[in-house]
Length: 329
Image (cartoon, rainbow, N blue to C red; front, side, top):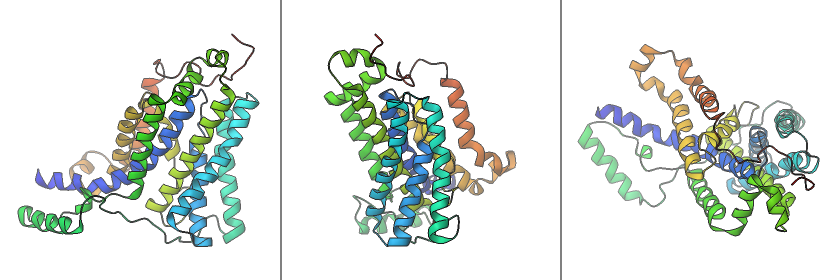
């Protein structure tokens, strides 16, 4: 039992590392859909952010915070394409998002070929390192020694205490999004834009501006999430760096019922299932029951199951996916 708990504890760094970008992108998707715009382009926006962060470090030698900032900016700029198509032109939002997902793959490969003569960036050498936040170093050293004396095993302390900076960023974004959505007038207007946009417009609020802002915020957060992925989970950017994380974040939005705390829980479930696929070698009994490929596919299986379960539920904003028309009552 103790060995099992130690393995679970040592999974925590991977779990938090994987959960953070899912949560950041999912919050962006929630804000966008709360305003009435479906954004399945989270995957493509994360790809753009990941490429930007990797290129910024490997080619221009910028710092990690600057690379994350640039990733967010590029994601936000790219999301304006989706905003123009879905809000201004009132195009089908799913088709627009799909087009951005496809476009992002082509653009990133083209830029990498142009700069590096390859479909990937060089080793950026800028991977983040975990830090202990509020815990002094001497505390962690003593805790490690105590764990070894008590359990007779080397326990990786980061499994319990060490967190990547992206974890704190994700938590801050979660708290800020909850505060703005439910405690500020702008959050009320944002939610009204996704529920009753005509009523909001009759009150003199610019629905178009609200929706543009929501799509822009989702792009900024998705770009930041993509940068977080490439700087914590990979040593360079490739077209498979994101590998469906944006679609998992999209599923986390519906699984979490478009609520900040619900999205936190669903993102953690997806992060834990992905981390389990990495650490499944530490669970030989599970490998005796199921092949390792099953655990690799588990996050996507959970995604499909949650989409099926919640597809008929009335949790989504009433006007999500519907273009706003001033002439309609």
